Length: 311
Picture 1 (cartoon, helix red, strand yellow):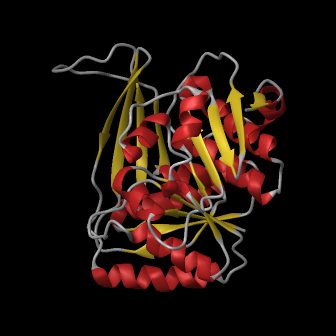
Picture 2 (cartoon, one colour):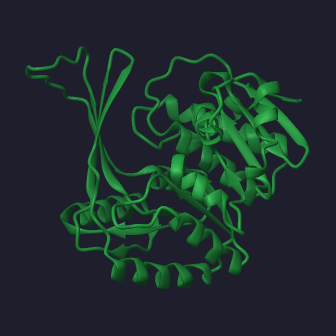
């Protein structure tokens, strides 16, 4: 089983508007509302790939109950800890190929709630969990190094962690004794982490990935948007190139990519196929209006169009 951790989930609301205008009324009849947060986007795609998955994190209040109901309707297994604060809403307005987001900060988690979650997390680790994905930011109330705490708890249970975060959270996760098994920063997040100039050039990225901060991380996937991605595993480097497509919505594509890579690791696929699977699921997500959704019937068609070369 895979376990997905979303500590600050949300109801994701996407409004599709032909021409969004400020300081006036905007009307739309195209709205999607889905259980969201980066980790739950991962969960939905894993479920669509027929990978056994359980979602965990924090839920609270009326919005939390709505989120649970949404997962139940999708047939997705979940096991959340409760919090007294209200689960957040996150709004995206998509108009004229642009995306404007309004993100609530979410509840403040108390020390007692954090302690209860760690006990719950430990129990889930014993329930045939093979891989864990951790995605997004931390809610208020958490120390910046909390992902390192989860990685260490997972290491004690011999579970590998795939981490999709950035900034301080990623930096803290890389400084402990136990490392994430896979990280998925984009090229801007790599530059921010290392305090260097952003670059999409493979030679430059390979140089960046040799920084000692990455020692002990088995897989480093640097996403490059429409230019594809570069992956490092040991001394092996591969670059993926994507076909040109007409995207419908980019929301959740990075999460779909992480789901694809988690599925590939779970299925013990080769390194090139791991990268191709992640790129395929990310690309399929951009072809759908609903966040964290893929059309599995199109998987093989696009998988065959992803070009992977060893560097």
